[in-house]
Image 1 (tube, rainbow, N blue to C red):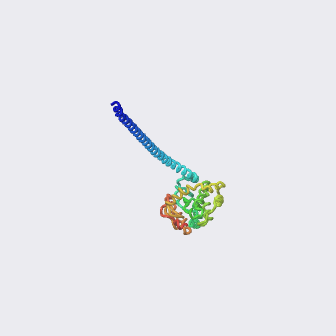
Image 2: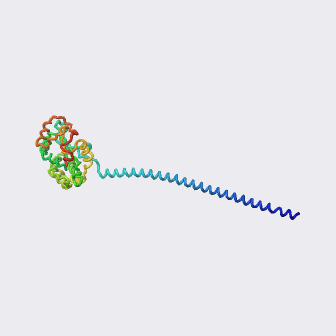
Image 3: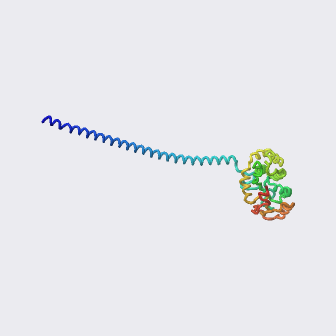
Length: 295
């Protein structure tokens, strides 16, 4: 009986061990699962942080790029302005005035003639041949108030692409020294007028003519630097383009005069207008020739 009782107790002990092992295995699996979930959460949080940081960094890069672009644009604009030089007009002329005033004072009651020319324009050369002497005489005698507009729109008709501006700048350079030198140089530029499609007169030749008109040696640097380029193109040419289609364009007391190609007709018309109102503002009636005829 004692032996029999002893044999019945053995299976119960083995079952407890197996149950304990199973319990430990389940706990271990649960712990492993929890650890896996923890790692997954950490990985997801890390991914989210990376995404957020990437978005923030990307936004910062975009903002910095915009700021950098603005700074670059401002810098380039300043450099461009510095390369162009300051917008200056010859002595005695406000920077927003697009012409030279010669002869009688504007408030004298003398007829006001607005004359638009381009030194590359062959038809302007014709005007000078026919009327240059009469114009010089009337200005000298103060029978007329001449408002001379030196245009630059035919730059493209020179092979260098800038002769009209260079010639007009030479006029501005002598005007800065003495307005009395403007018409003498104007005459010389038309007497030595280059043909369309050529390079035009060199700066050295322009300097020579300016000195011949009475300018000092200082005129050389003014001509070579195109000191008045911006005034000529941004003020003189801008106003001219709004008032007339081409060159030469002649206005007497604001009314277009187109019979200038008849010898003596221009001087007669100016003198006949004596005592008329002096406004000098060119009308939009157009010039004696359009840009095509001028070129």
